Length: 292
Ligand code: PMP
Image (tube, rainbow, N blue to C red; front, side, top):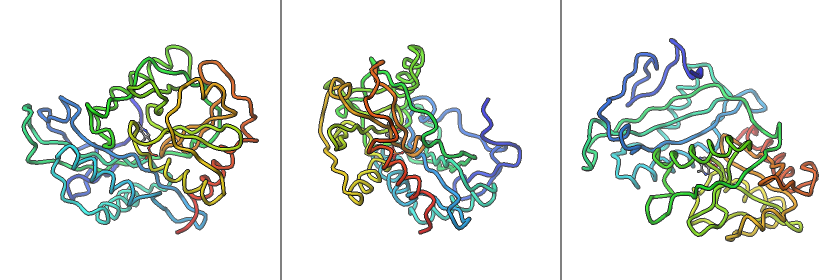
């Protein structure tokens, strides 16, 4: 088992700061049986002046509310109070570079009836930056992303990650580092837990919203490109267009900005260091540790 907590770890649970090792969940929860829960994945960083800063905290907690509302899970929190609670969790666990996992889940309810109660927990554990150590070998998945007509795909819902995990297993079974999934129309969508961009003829392209999770890092990359004068086109495209690209990368809170070596064994033409993705990666790296 991975080391997410020990006997001293403190989590936030329904307004209290309690020990992780002494906390329980209800085994009769709709969330456990049907994957009916919502969550966030957030990072905090030690900034250049030594302080701890949660990156894009408001955006993440606003999305958590949107996710809970989408699934009609009771949610009576302001983003500001949860941000404050998250800083307290970090402080009590002595964490600076951390991964933060808020989760909203239902109480006992085996039926398909509306949840009248929900719980909220915030957990955090140490996580260093992943940025750019090693380029990824990506394989196109046989799995497609959930159909927006079947799921609330702009919600970060637990059940959607059955799809992500199946795709990731398949990619690794085939010897790839990670999967690239298409949407229900066969166009390139996203990774199991990250959005994608590719470079072609001096500009970046990324899948349009509609069939993907609207990533907070994706939005940050778009902001960075605007600041740097890098042109970005949002559209629907095929994997063959990505095969012909000069470079490509994933972006996400956990993945940060990470370049690809190849897609389905077809190597990208440009050296990562000469790509627009590398420029974006450097700018992102500076942003996450900048003091606000
Ligand atoms: N797509 C999926 C399916 C994800 O799980 C994630 C991670 N939350 C992302 C994209 C990237 O989103 P963000 O940048 O908000 O972390």
